[in-house]
Length: 299
Image (cartoon, rainbow, N blue to C red; front, side, top):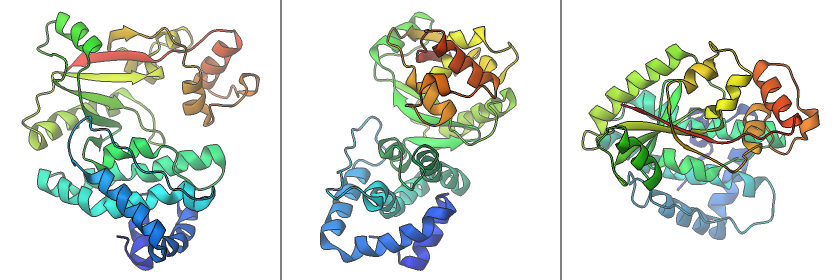
C-alpha cells in the first residue's frame, strides 16, 4: 500500500510536504506497514477515499485512527493520501488532466501541513476532510485559484435562476476557493485562473455544463470595504461577485484563522502590521462581527 522508504521520501516531496517533516514521516511509515492493525486501518481508509472516484458530492468519512494521540495519529492521513495516489493519478490520466495540474492540485497536502505547523508548531494534517476533494478528482488548482466541481443548492439556484441563468438545484456549478501561501490575489492572477478554468473544464469535463461560479468565504464580507481601499486586491475580488445570500450567523473565527493562523487567538493580541490585519482585528475589538459572504458570477 505504501512505497518503500526511498520512494516515499520522493513522493512526499512531490506532494509539497514540508521538508522538516519528511524524515519523521519516512520513519513512521515503516511502523504503518509493519503493524497489521495499522495496515488494516490504512486499507479501510483508502477504500473509503477512492470509492466512487470522480463523483461529486459523495460523503467521504475517513476512518479515525484508534491510536494514542501523537505524531502518528496526526500524520496518519498523509499515508492514506499517499496510498491513494495511484488511484487519483489513474483517474486524472483517464480524464486527460495535464501532469502539472495534477501535481499542483495534490500539492495542497503540503500546504495543509504547513497551515497545521503554523498553528500548532508540529507536524500534522490540518483538515484531512478538505483534501478528500483533491484526491477524488473533484477539485483542481488552476493558477491562483482552486475550482471545485459541485452542484447548485436550493437557495443559490433560485437567486441565480432569477437572474436569467438556466440553473436548478442539482445542476453543475464551480465553487471557487482561495488557497493560502500562493501570493497576492491580484486581478491579473484571478483573470488567468478563470481563463484556465474555462479551458480546463470544457476539455476534461465536457459533459458538465457550468453556468455559474460560486464562492463562500469571509473574503466576500462587504464590511471589508469599510477598511480597505477600492483598488485593493480583496475589494476587486469581491467586485466580481453578485450576492447569492447573506449569513446572519457570525463567523469571527474564520478571518482570525486565515489571517493570523490560529482561530483561538485573543482579539486584543491580534497584530496590526498590514491593512487586512488592522481591518480584522479593529473590527472585532470594536465589538462587531464578521460573516461568511456568499457570491456568484456567470460563466
